[in-house]
Length: 267
Image 1 (cartoon, rainbow, N blue to C red):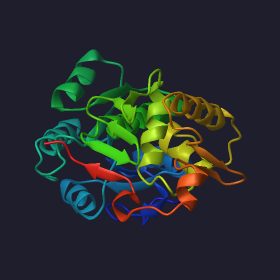
Image 2 (cartoon, rainbow, N blue to C red):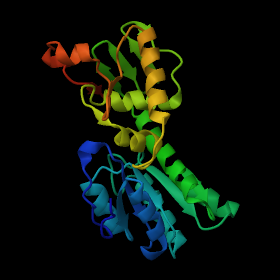
Image 3 (cartoon, rainbow, N blue to C red):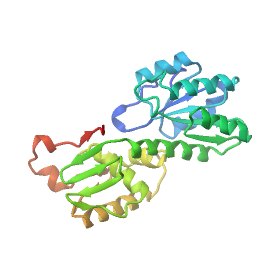
């Protein structure tokens, strides 16, 4: 997926679950990062001044803002402070994840990034795989920490408390990425998520990479749900991917109120 022009959305498909990222800073100095993220399947938007940033955030749900290299670091810090204060996106400003790219390894610059409101800081020089892992960790954190409750049939996920139950039975022993995978599948339980979608959304792995990571995590998640009473959940669709709902629930008549996952925001 190619990146869009500076300050203009690249038009990613919001139905695929591909995270939308905003890379803020000078175009030419951050081009390699933008290209790398696009090649890894992310929807990349770019902005080089506050007006462009405001336009992108106003037109698209952004999963992460990356503050790349810029000639005026002070101006970048001020934009980060304004973003965190909700000046650009009042409804999501305090929650919007931000990654600060430090141009050097000086502790002072790192601390200034955190003090301005960055959720994480990566020091230059750095390897791109580390950068991508940091970015994906922040995206996953946003999924995990979204307050509210997801309910589907007997399943209940309290994302604020990080608790999963099947009826009255708790699902115990879930590892972090198993939990993130469950939350992602529960966002649309009857939908079949392609393997490449899940690898991008949960692990930040680009398409075309052969790995058994997803299959092993899905298998462990299936066993833990079954142990709590949800037998047959996390259905593998051969050659395509996974869905949360088992075949018996997809084929059986269902009430309208339980036909899809219900998201309730915590007060």
